[in-house]
Image (cartoon, rainbow, N blue to C red):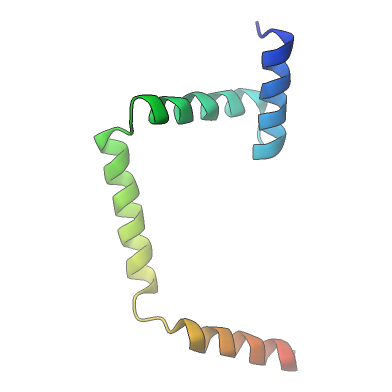
Length: 77
């Protein structure tokens, strides 16, 4: 169903994404739609909720202390 140029592009995307050609094509279509039409309100809401959850999970973490702890473990482990 795909011409040679499109098949090659789909294979390159699949290799880059580490997925099947059909999934690479699906991803490419969704990305193009999002760029052209924009992201739906439901998708924006889901992204916002995921970001807020991530922020909540890391709230109060001291990044410098965590890095120092990991370096100390690596030095003795």
